[in-house]
Length: 164
Image (cartoon, rainbow, N blue to C red):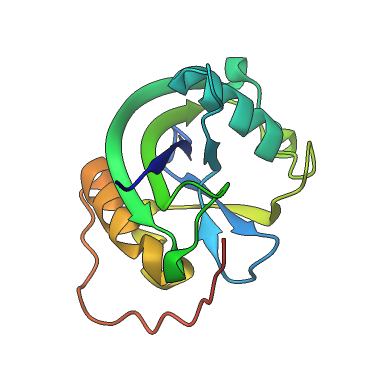
């Protein structure tokens, strides 16, 4: 039986202009994603979201409001890799969060630094080639579900190699 690790991801949106926050991974130049991470044993999804967001980008819960969430997004790790010797992939719950803080409040080295930089973009500016191939389908679905954006099914020229 395949076992997927529970995972949460935060899409931060500025309510005034609709821009979303994306972060470039420190360990893989050119790979952009949303703050995200695993759910610890005994932790609920919202608790995991608050912890991961604070660890990865230094944002405290009073700086954002949960707007909506969707779950059931799954991907497998490449080449049969198992995370923690057990998980063949991750099952993600995405939270759309309205962000009310300031740019200077995003701290990428708050904990163990996972991102080299962050930027705010309109959802339509996101490029599927910025994610590793094994995560493409999840990002296609997330952008369709949250922003009604459909990416072309044509090859994305994705040169991002990525290990977990």
